[in-house]
Image (cartoon, rainbow over all chains, first blue to last red; front, side, top):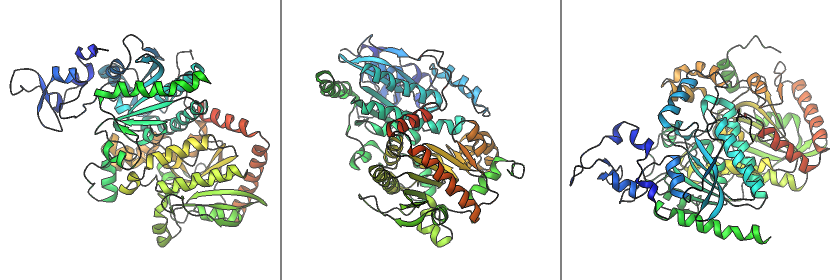
Amino acid sequence: MPFIEFLFKPKNELEKGGRQSVQVASADENEPSKPCPNCRKMVPLSQLWANHNTCECGYHFRMNARQRINFICDADTFSEWDAGVTSRDILDFPGYMTKLENTRNACGESEAVVCGRAKIDGEDCCIFVMEPYFMMGSMGTVVGEKITRTFERAIELGLPVVGYTVSGGARMQEGILSLMQMAKTSGAVKRHSEAGLFYLTVITDPTTGGVTASFAMDGDVILAEPGALIGFAGPRVIEQTTRRKLPAGFQKAEFVLEHGFVDAIVPRSTQKATIAQLLKMHAGGERVG
Amino acid sequence: MAKNTVSKAYDRVRLARQNGRPTGVDYIENIITGFIELHGDRNYADDEAIVGGIGYLDGRPVTVIAIEKGRNSKERVAHNFGAPHPEGYRKALRLMKQAEKFGRPVICLVDTSGAYCGIGAEERGQGQAIAQCIMEMMALKTPSVSILIGEGGSGGALALAVADRVWMLENAVYSAISPEGCASILWKDASKADEAAESLKLTATDALALGVIEEIIPEQELGKESFYEKLRVKLSREFRELGAMDANELVRQRFERFRNLGVPDMGGKK
């Protein structure tokens, strides 16, 4: 299918402000562009959008949840579940309400995950996509509940689940209840698995903490995007704790693949085709049985 | 309960971390008889931060898995201050699956500031090891009780606390992040840890109110013979009740227990 969606201006990435989004004239033309942290070249924005937010050097820029859904799902097949559900300040945590409100306004999403049902190259599936621009995809009770419901609905519908993860971990403003979401989601994944259904995770940059230590690592097949940071503890914490310099490429997808914890690294250029093929390969068992 | 003697959350954090507080091995020695320690994850190594094995609880074989901080400096180093590597969680999971096979109940004693954060731990899949522990514990077809006896630090503690019953000692704490970590991330100031501890609602009373645990174990007699005696009787009684339940029903109820934690208002529709 044509990736026409990429012609639309990605809302969050570019309106974010800060160093990366400073528009510098590129060498050849006066086109808006942004620097690639990998090859340091200025990448024209039009080129970025046309290549699913990747630089020609292979660097994968961050993508918001809607962009991903548009990118991976067949046109007009995504129907969202539990849209607009927002978190409450259950623990009366200082500053949380303001933070939530500001984040909702800046990001345009109501929470850090978007869930629903869609077709990927004609294959019916349930999908959840985490949102990096909503408090760094941190998992609170709403994220835990929405993902759990996605698996529960997938069980009812007899469908596979495709999950895109990006997260800084448990949301500390929801304290111990956010930690409990790791158990809750894992329980739902287990039930889905016991129903003989397929679960595919795509780990994107960065996925750490409680999400790595629960549903991100629970997939039947685990894919990762090139260069994605994947770990339990964050690199800064490890450096502080061990007082050792971290080896080059530490916790990057390539490193994690080498150590045997992901199945394959799949760039965006072939991601949809790979996911579709895996879904097709797992569709038989359910239907024949 | 000595409720008024400790009022601030951060005081509880200090108490939970205090040297001289009974560690996992103390509980095993005082509650379990004929304990045989079983080592190794059958993949890579034996992680001494987790002590596991089989023993008798009131004459009945049980599997006990304890995160051990160590009782003196030498022990603390040997047990890596109770910060497990992936091998510790894989050993724990191996022992739990073994318990399931032979129908033994599982007791987990949790006391950790968190899973170890280090290069080797990451290389060997700390996140994956914890994730697997959580998922398999959720579906374990044998009764389990987890007791948070000191620090319940984040995913490294939860990995051994997805049980049918979760109890907490009066001065134990249970949190998604340490108060110091929380303060330095949110306020860029680790010295505001006491404020963070208050906000995180990490005490046993909070956990009980939020439905995260079933019971608080009083500490007046902590470490005394009578303390262990009461706990032993309590565990025995709990396992008699849980053991009477059909295994599938047990798993279903365990799932529901965690399923219902922190359910936000979803706008009335399922």
